[in-house]
Image 1 (cartoon, rainbow, N blue to C red):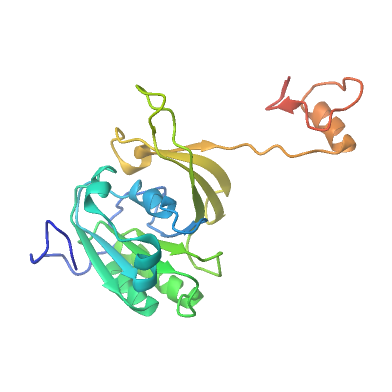
Image 2 (cartoon, rainbow, N blue to C red):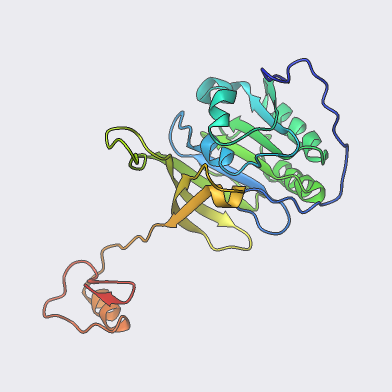
Length: 260
């Protein structure tokens, strides 16, 4: 375990608690195991997306990496984490094999003194199967500790995670004072598997002024309107209350029930 501020100190943590109803991230109700899949090589979107959901206060955060993840994605940097409002100690654990990441996460998930657990595994190793993710999900739900698994270089094999996200970095938002400077961080977030909520795609951004994790991560829906053939275009016009205008254009001339 390593942290510039807490290295060498002993942290007193409670060993086990029942579900405490902690709130962190996008989950509602019991805490869930969340899979986060960065789409690009060495894309920091996965780490940023998770950091935007971590609690700013409470117990320490356990952050576990395998050797391949540290090599491909780099190690967590506390100065950068503070830009996401993270003020709690971060207990960093680096191991050589993915099985050790899973073991450390399972042990941490039994400790109610932690505010969150983040694990990073690169690729799709055989040990990261449905059974392993099921154990993580059950332990996190039992203790009330949210668990995040960043799976870089993984296309999305079978998992028991309650929510599964694909994220990628996007151009930053406009800077409020200098149009030539980078603005707010933005990601494209695709929820492709979920229990208890509908999948969807959003443009996500981080708001440092939010009072809690749910307020700090802003999600704006992205409406994908594809090309429609002639029959589908006329049906879309009629469904929206707009009559045909002569020859149908190649794309639907409607959006949200309004004729354009």
